[in-house]
Image (tube, rainbow, N blue to C red; front, side):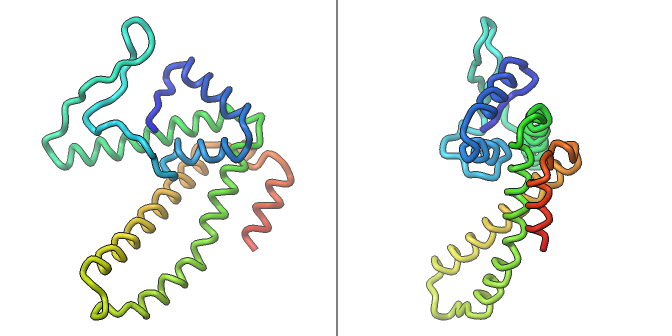
Length: 185
């Protein structure tokens, strides 16, 4: 889900939506906006939305990068821009508990890694490649790579949140602070 926040009406619509829906739905929407939740539908990489001349949006063809370095730079800068836009939304939601709830949800996911890491270590020890087909080995390796990628994305979102959003917005209520302290222990 790629969105443009320099358009005030778009930001206002997202803010209204996030402040008026059920908390679990809002948290899921924030996960999608952050890139942490898989996207079911995507637009082809060489297409993008631009503002329409008479309002609305247009789907336009974007020139593709011929250089791999340029393509990687565009991808990384696009992800960074998306997170900056998300942080703007969270900062605007300073009067709601949603930014803190989202932050705590991500921290809880981060703390659950310890047990997952232990399970992965056990899997590595039990992995008998000689008894597996090449397809099974490939699927196992791709699964590990996907989990690592997801963890890196989570760390990136948390780092940007801590850097960009005021602590008073992230942990607005004493119950959120107590929840944070309990999850650390």
